[in-house]
Each structure stands twice: as C-alpha cells, then as structure tokens.
Image (cartoon, rainbow, N blue to C red; front, side):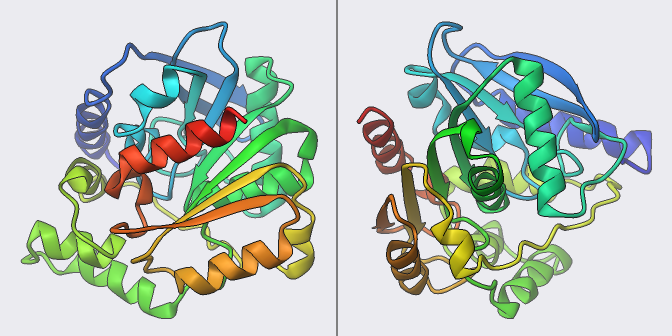
Length: 280
C-alpha cells in the first residue's frame, strides 16, 4: 500500500518510535486473513483473559501507549493494525463494507484461537467493534466504545478540520491537535507526529455510516461507552443520550477535559473506567 520504499521506511520509523513508548514487553505477530496479513502487537500474560484493541483511522495500534500498561496488567492484549489502514498490516483485498471488516476480525480471532474476547475500539475501531457485536455477537464478551465513529452522522465540518490540519503546513502542533482531536494534549504529540509523517501511502478512508436505531438495539453485549466532552465528530451529549436510549445493556459517561482521543487526553480516568467495567 506504500507507493515508495522511502515512504514506507519513514512511516515504519515513526511507528516504531511510538511503539517504543509502550512501557511493557511487546511481541509482534502477523496472522493471515482473507484480506491480507494482519499485524498484531501482543502483551500481557498468556494466561490472562483476551482483550482486543481496535485503533482509530490512520493512527495504528501504537496509539494505545497511555493505556497499555494498565490493560496488559490484567489481560492478554492483542492490539491490531486495521487491515487496509495505516500500520504494518499488509492488505491484499481492501474491505469495502462493514460485513467484510467483521469477516476480517473473525479470521483474526480464528488465527489467534480466540472463541471470544473483550473488545475495545476507538473512533473507526469503535465502529468496527460495534459491527462485530451486531453481526458476530458470540465473539464479544464485553464491549468498550471510545468515541465510536457511528453513533451519529459525522459533522461535515470535521472533514474540513482534518483537511486544514493536513494541508496547512504552518500550523503549530497545538493548533493541529485541536483541529484533529478537539483539544491539545501533550500526550497526543507522538500520535500526531506519526499521523503527519510523509508516507506515500495509498490511503482510502472508510466512511462509517451512522447506526440505525435497530442496529443499536441489536447490541446485547455489556457495553461501556465513553465520550470526551470536547468531541469534534458529533455532539457528545446527543450521542450519549441516543446510546443510552437505544442500547439495552450500556453504561455511559462523558469524560471531562477530553476530546476525540479520550484515551489519550484522560488516560488514567479511561483506564479506571475500562478496568472497573471489565472486572464486574
């Protein structure tokens, strides 16, 4: 998916620099799927319950650096690079619909010999986690949604913010973070650096459609939903109320002083929320 070897080399260097922020031992693994080879960063005790992490678009599995120590202390963590997106997965056939992403996740689970797992997803990863819970509910023990991309339609202004952040070279790092994420957090700097690395990657964004009422009602797995109060992709309070009205088994909270990257803006709070929820 990289147009040039030099672009791939630059990106992998940025990827590895972010992964180096993980304060725990990490094992890299590649597993085959019908859509290509999936790269997974694995940590935590092999005997611990499995926890699958799905990142946001364009940022890779390395984005969990503020959370991985806490999560891997209690779980065997499998952090996936989404097929067809940024990361070290190698896509041979790009998924174009939600069902195909669920098939991809099923292939990954099978390759890892996981009947089911706790699943945590943020942004695009939250959308994919929702689809897995809807279309393959037997795979999901508990569901954690952080700023999921599909609770409401994404504001058109968000795409303008992203375009400005990418195309305006003189922006300060703080202003670029605010455009991408809704607020500037020092914790987000490594992720933004990786995101802005020139890569020559043939990137095609997957646009998540807003969930219908019926789709949200279909999610039966115990679910934790966390949204930052400064969410930029849709009105956070409206999305929270919609989820609480329609999802039959959801706990939800608005996280203060956090934007779209809620796990990075408030890592200690989010880690506590997740661990307490999964430990019930």
